[in-house]
Picture 1 (cartoon, rainbow, N blue to C red):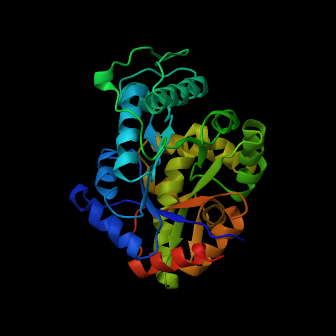
Picture 2 (picture 1 turned 90 degrees about the vertical axis):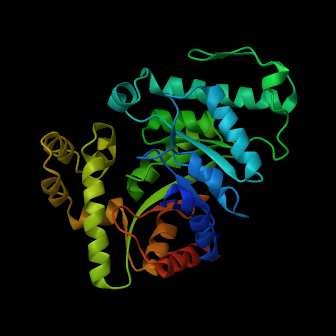
Picture 3 (picture 1 turned 180 degrees about the horizontal axis):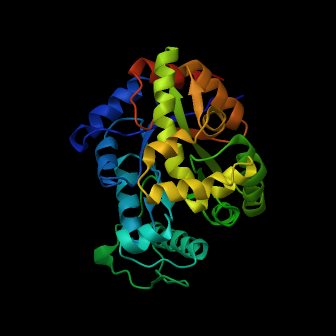
Length: 334
């Protein structure tokens, strides 16, 4: 089995983004990623881009609230700044957040994402090839690019565009349209193999395509540390499981009836009770748990024959740097 490069969530104050990225590289970590949380998704990567040899990635940036022109400019600049080490990961989010948090339009998410990916790529190609910009899609039209706003060819080529997906339609669309798939962290090996990989096969054909998985990891050096991490992971799994769009993962494992129960409790703010419904079998299937070496072995067994990289997510706790180094070493061995 080949090495599996490791990316770690860049969880640091903005001003310390470059320092933390350099520390992670020194531990053997291959790159860092950001996601849409309480802070901007792109600004930390502008600082991390200055660290030599560190891959940088959004996993994910919300696509629908942003114009493809804004996405193209940001992706171009980060790709150039990093020396060709940036991946633009896009996600759709869910309707309440798109409409009520971002205050923008939600409709036909699969087709809207397809159009967004194509529009961003058309803009980037117009800059790279010096051709006239003439993109006319269902949701986006980009037909004007004057020399004053054209950055010209990127010496590092076009940044890859990846799509975060869970359901079969979005996954198949990503495989047919994007350069890679970001596998959602709320997943099990059975769902990945029975639902995700067949959808990728239907969409990609024979063209090159990157699969990057995100693993929720509960690791420690002792039983006490591992159990503490598992408790933190339970809270996240309960939150994910309360979302209707994640029910198919639970259905595959025979846990589908838990989803509406979690959803009801979430609306009542009964978060502690929600976590209590996530038993050990669910933690073992939906997350990765153990010592750093054990976690590396589980990830390689679960995803190593299909994935090109893995993003590790440590929700609600912070493993020691030595543990991160051991996890990276375990994943990067051939």
